[in-house]
Image (cartoon, rainbow, N blue to C red; front, side, top):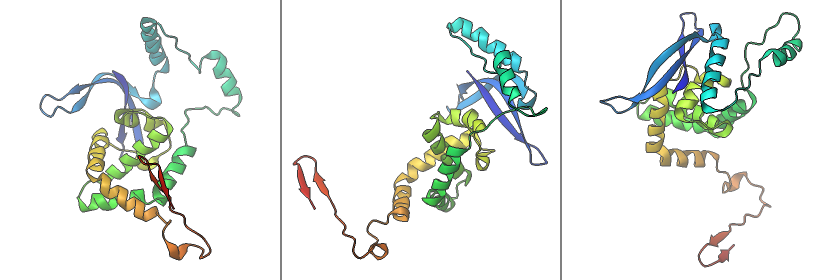
Length: 220
């Protein structure tokens, strides 16, 4: 059982988020995991935070753990004092690492290669964004595919990944598994410059080291 975030795109282009208590069940025919909603908490921007805190504390008592409310009275006053005027802190998003990861994703040609493979197989281009999201998550704060879609994406600034569906996460991994060798080869040739002699200084000397693990043989 987990707290699920669902998103709905409005006609004006804005996105509304909702919080729901859910747990996964396997579909009797497809055997794929399907989320079953146990309780709706309503819109994220109209969330009754105290209700969730009370739920956390009631669960914590049963599990014999402690819940620390960082926005409780003492800490909340300190946080609000740092803001000018009547400015209210609504939320924060992680920015730095995901911006760097997305830039490297583009520079190394990974996204381009994936989109080319997807186009040839007539698969949804959203799979490339799903793979970017899961890769960025693995480098920042590893979660499951469900965790990336349901929790992590709402905590970072990756606008190109908004609107992804949970099934696209699973289907993207199936696609990558089938195309792994081709993708690895394409990315390698896109990035490898070691033996591109035309781009090297003619005075540079290239040393190739071959190591035989079993015999301990070294060759240059």
